[in-house]
Length: 423
Image (cartoon, rainbow, N blue to C red; front, side, top):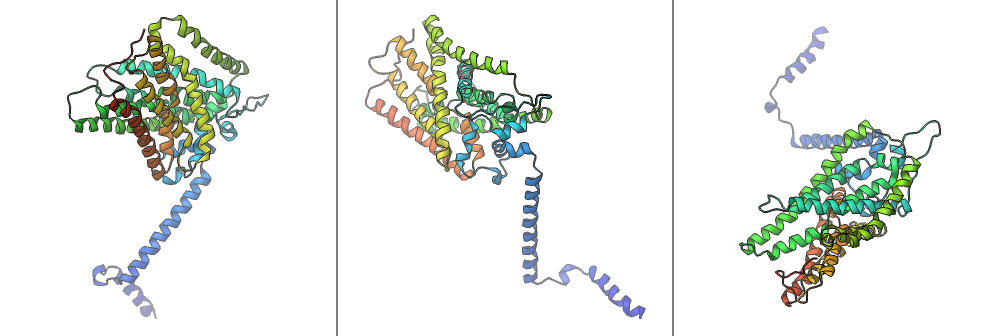
């Protein structure tokens, strides 16, 4: 009996050492095993994703825009509908504020949530706009020199997108401290530091070779493509880098207390006084400063406010791409082309008018258009919609400049070698 029981065991052991080639498995059995293995891996992956969603922290669930930007390989984290991106420019909502807030015993004060068009939110755009346009003009002055290795606007776009990513990563903490401060940093400062209209004009002037550089048409194309591709790459990379730099701070300070009431009122008052001060600064300082800074400061806040209104009202209307930022960038680019032509008409404008036109280009159009918000939206959208958004924004802008500047050039109405002079 024992031998009869040992025989099957010995045969089973022997079969384990037989080479697989001597007992080939039928093809149908292999296909069935492969299919079952893939099915099990899919089900395991789905269960793992569901467990990750259930075990994800409230911070990860709240800051969905930051998660979509920071995880570019996870397509499921990206936004399907573009109208969900309208919150990028707005103060954090109630869930985000609660996530970043800490109770203050014994009064247990609840952090205040601000509506998009609340008075503190609108006034917070003023200091961000003024400091943003001054930072842009300063960076352009520092990085625009002979034989520079990289075009000056690349520094501007990279710096603004870096701060934008940093602020986006701290959205809950800033919102818990003082919601309008988030809008001041991202929409105000970063949106005014970066500029879509100047980028598009710079690309178009590279195609046209208005500087009369000693190169053929093929090099003109390369120059324009280089400014297009590297601006996109630098902007997208800077947003991601800013997000990564914010993570150690969010881990160190996951919750913060709300700003004191006195500090909140002081911020609102100083914001209004700052914009009121731009008017006497424009008229009292030397006229030589008008085209350099003071005119741009005067028109910076209206440009930022226009962009904020467009983003808040138009973006929720279309699911294909962010309509608000798209309209702001397109309109600002068209206006830059018009002002560029007006500065070079046969009957050149007066020095004061020339300074106003330059202020409208640097201040209003520079703050109306933005690359920082544009880069965040591109990163957060699904790939097909992101490419569509980039292609439409870039293509429509270049076509508009072709119509505006090309018509003036071919009609002999302007000469890029002649420009109005400043005081």
